[in-house]
Length: 140
Length: 172
Image: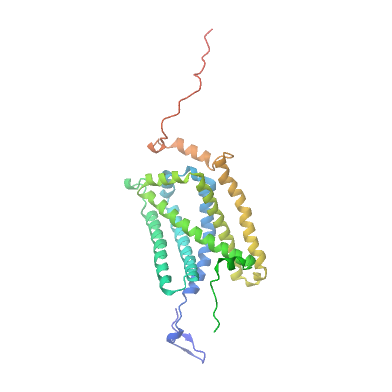
């Protein structure tokens, strides 16, 4: 971020304290568009592959092991779960800020729900990155 | 300063005639939160496969209940609508001229999601009514024949065979 801002009376100077606004909402807006576009393809591919081509009736741990033996699909899933969870987390933030107006309950709601979303994201990425079909403990 | 009464209750919300803009906004939020809830459960139960594959297979057996098939279809529809409506929002953001047609575009997003879910519903629901094979059945059979038999394949004692023994023709 640039530390220089346009002074309405001409010239550039260091921002005054009250002018220092974060660009977080801009970045979050942009992230929702970028991740949303990626998710249209990634999530719909994932749903089509497992529900309409493989058939969930045929799914078992052996099939997951076959799929995850290929590092490409593990990385694809890391991308899919990261984009989906962070896109969902930001959507959840919009909803909390719409419905929970008082500061105390808002912080508490955010703390609990962010923890749940981020913990399941971490658990999912951990599973995908540490999975090793050659290790007996990981006999998926 | 006038007080703005923000929360007017459910009845006011239902009577509020926001039409297409409100319907798509409401559906977008409801489907988004629904997908997030499903996603958390889905990620947690899929990730257990690395340490507890047996538990994973047990969870999958629970999901074979037809009730879950309808829930999966609902998730599929939610993703489809959320994707199409999200695409509409992106187009409107980057190309403000089309805002003039936002009503029609909102209805188009709902309509396209409803049309696209029809073949998906047939493929996903027909197998539970025995109208059609589960997708991927041929591939599944080939895979089962190719791999080593496993104790996980055991489905209890085989049903007694009721077919008559083959009739051998008497030698002339």
